[in-house]
View 1 (tube, rainbow, N blue to C red):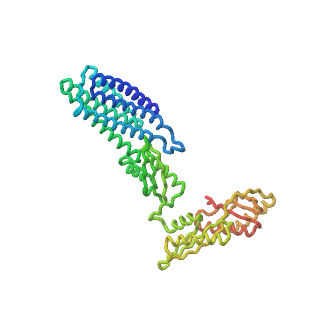
View 2: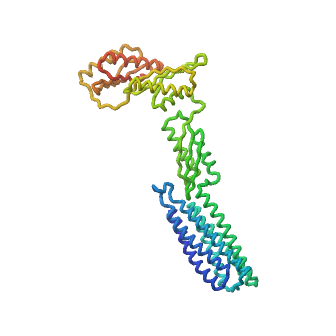
View 3: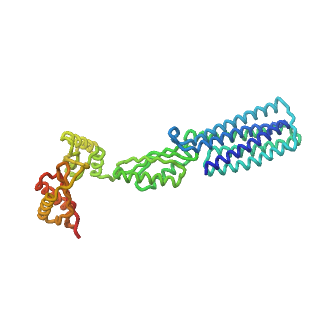
Length: 456
């Protein structure tokens, strides 16, 4: 829809430029008026600019591709820059002719009624198309159409100057026509300067005034964002390509990190809707991060996992103990190497005046193709589980017993009720002991897992 509007108004401008160029050129040649001839040349360049705008808006709305990842919208900026150059060329020719007529060559200007008519028609046409172009330019944020609108609004003033010049010539002030032409050139130079400056700013990726502050302010409204380290803005036609680096606590999960990134993008778009936003997340350590959390994060960076972290402070010296999970298929040498690297990282963070004791535990995570054991063997193992469970004070009524076999090893899992008022640590200790006894009593068991649940 936007593309059709832009194309239609640009094509309409082309047709009016053709009409005005032919009309002014004919009247200028007949009357000898430099003011009208300068306007004719101005309209001829307007025609070139209008054609350039028409083709640029057709190309600029093409979607991004492999060779143009930021799209084609900057073609409008190039179009506007060429249009600025045309304005300066126009002004140079007008100034040259004006100086020649003022000091070296006297030319009589014939004032006829249709000379006034052509300028008046030109003014009305420029008012109409400048308004139409600016309206669509604001709706679509098209730089090329805005450049055309600015161009034709300056034409209104230059045509007005020529009209005043013709009136003065009619009242026997012959130099007025040449002076009017000089006024036209000054207006055109001013329009060209404003247009080229704005276009050049876009081509060198100058961010719109105040946009960086708006982006930072919106991003900081998102919960979980603790800082903004970098904002880059790249204008391209009606769109802004935004890259922002936001700082978050390194303690939060990957899923939460992704959620924060999406929220930042959504929040920025409430203020800068025509934008393509890339959010970079930078995890950082916060002042409220505990030593235990710090150790967990360091382990994660080494691709390891730790638990049961205990930190003792004795006479200003720290003693750190934890269990380190290492792939069960690792050799002892490989496992010890992982532990040593982690211990070095911890000492680098907290200083060498600490004592670290690492308990290495084998960790296995795999998918196995299993099968159920025969009915007779299943009944024997089930009876053993019930008998062993009966010896515990806080674990009772084993149920949902599942017994499987994989790689010639037996895997057992079952649920048991427990006293809901005892501590988690006490419950875990009893469950661990139960699992140990089952593995001791029943041959060929690879793993026994007890899921405890309080019984109301």
